[in-house]
Image 1: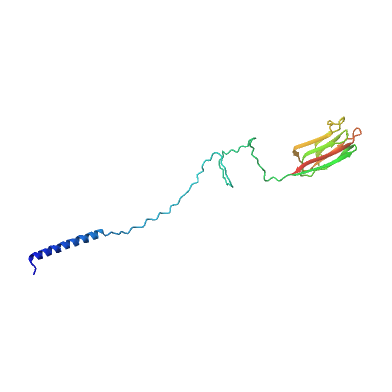
Image 2 (image 1 turned 180 degrees about the horizontal axis):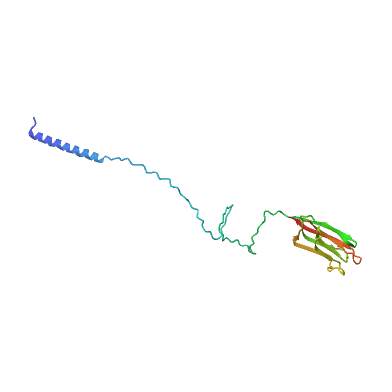
Length: 211
């Protein structure tokens, strides 16, 4: 049999072990991490975005390469066209003009009527006429008229010493800068005036263009 003293000591030892067990169990439970379920991050809603293209003022000199499509809406835009820096323009709808001309040498006795003439096509714009005498002549008359005998030019020349012509240098040069046109056609011709035993020798030519 155990003595009362041993029984009391044994009880005290058991109580101490029980207390230690309780402390260990409590610490273990307190140290156990707690896992909480986290909600997923919310999805950002789709928001429409409007981008406004605001024109920006541009000053100075710009260097642009390649092809550029530009829409200019500035009513105050001024394109300078000075004599020092002219702005060249081209009529893209205009067809190239076709130059035309004709001429003839002559040696005629006096003839009060037309010695000869050129009939120009109806679509020719006359720009130049040249008459030159290569032998002494009292008078040779150049004329330009249309097919209805409407006369535009009537001019006489002779050799030096002639008393029948205002011009005595034996040459007539006509330059029509704006050109002469007739819808019914033009005629360029020569008279060898029947005066003072006259004779006429030289050449006559005309030139122009067809639009």
